[in-house]
Image: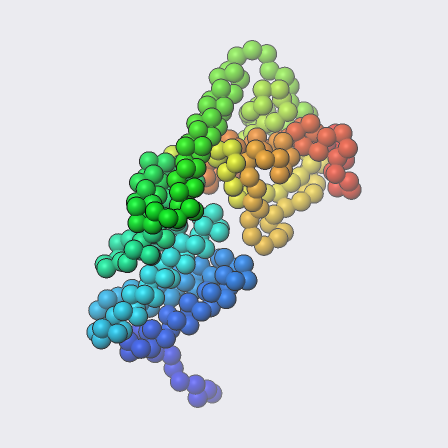
Length: 295
C-alpha cells in the first residue's frame, strides 16, 4: 500500500506549478552542465521547455513573462549542450525555435544567431552561416567572438573544398593504372582509397552525402571497434567506454589510416577501414595487444 499523492496530469496543474516544474528541470540541467554531462543537461533543458511552451497555459502577465524567459533560456541552453556534443543539426533546430518566439529581445537573439551560425559552419552551410553571423554582428558589433567566428567562414569553406577535391582526385587517380595489392586478409570488395594498398575501405551503411565529408580541422565523433586482421582479436573499442570518441581531422591525433579514412566518410556512415602497418602502428606496434607490422 502507498499513501503517496498521485502525480497530477499536466492539464490539472496550475501555471505556478508548471513554472515550478520547468525551474526544477532547468536547475537539474545546470548542475549536469557544470559536471560536463552535456547529454543529461540537454535532456533536462529540453524537458523544461515542455512545461512552458504553451502560451495559453499562462494568463497572468507575470506568469507569461516568467514562462517566456524560461522557454527562451532553456532552448538556448539546449543548443549550447548540442554544440558541446557536436550535434550540429540539433543546435540549428533549437536556435531556430528560439528565433521564432514572439517578442524576443536582442540579447537572446544574438546568442541564437551566433550558435546557429557556428553550427552551420560545421555543417558546411556557409551561406546561411554568413547570414546568421552578420545579423548577430549588427546586433552586437562589439563582440569579438562573433567577428572571429564570421572571419573563420572563409577558411572553413576553403578547407571543405580542398577536402572534397582531394577525395575526388583520389577516386580519379585510382580509376586506372596498376594497383598495389592490399595486405593479406583484406576483403576483395574493400576499396583502396590510398592508391598504394595501405588503406582500404568497405562501406557497411551509407551516410548522408548531402552534408559532404569533414574538412581539415573539423572535429568528428565516432564509435569504433579495433581488431587485428590476422586473427580477428579486438584490441580496443569505444563501445567499452561511455560516450563517443572525438578527434580533429588532419591534426595527427589518431593513426594515419584513421585520419585519412574518416575524412572520406559522411555523417551517419558505417564502414570498415583496413590499415596496413604503415597506416597504423608501424613496425613497433602497440604492445601488448598490437604486434609490430600488424594490419
